[in-house]
Image (cartoon, rainbow over all chains, first blue to last red; front, side, top):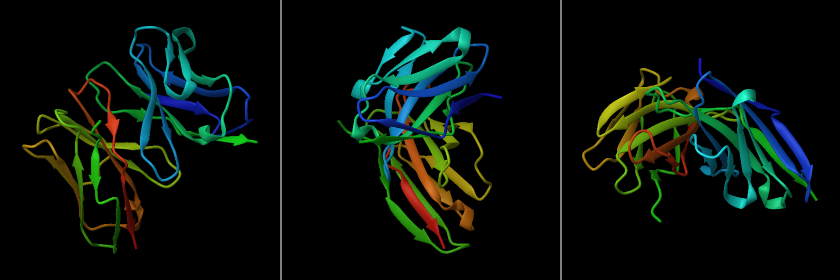
Length: 114
Length: 112
């Protein structure tokens, strides 16, 4: 079954520190991969996406992610955390073979400490 | 830029009542998706429509039905509501069913 796993339901970092949110997918065929952010009581906002072009993808708000086929990973990073980055982050996958739906990971709640 | 519009934003219903959620996609988008996000959970795909035809189906209960109309807006009809139906319901739209999905702000349904 198609799935995506996010390691760590809660991540806490200090303001200015590196942010690393982990995502692994299960598939022998590289899918489309996405990172979404959800602020409290709001909808899902697309941060970035991988669609088989460049393996290093840059998104909004200074986030980027690197697709590593050998590790089936798509980890999200940001060099320097800001207080406004505190939110829930979801990794999602969509496969080529006719599937349209997004399959989401369990989400990672990012907390920024002053 | 225009975004996905969902109405109502909040809805409170009693058990066994019915509810209708509406979704207005971004202009020119022909594909609509519905997702359900329970408290503290990740969004789960319910159903999608492409050019007014159902295109994919996920874990949507038989008590729920949905359709896409000629103007591409979609409605999710929920009957015999249960406490467990309390969730945030997202609609997303895309241009073509293989392109990026843009999410609406969601409808928060509370069943008492």
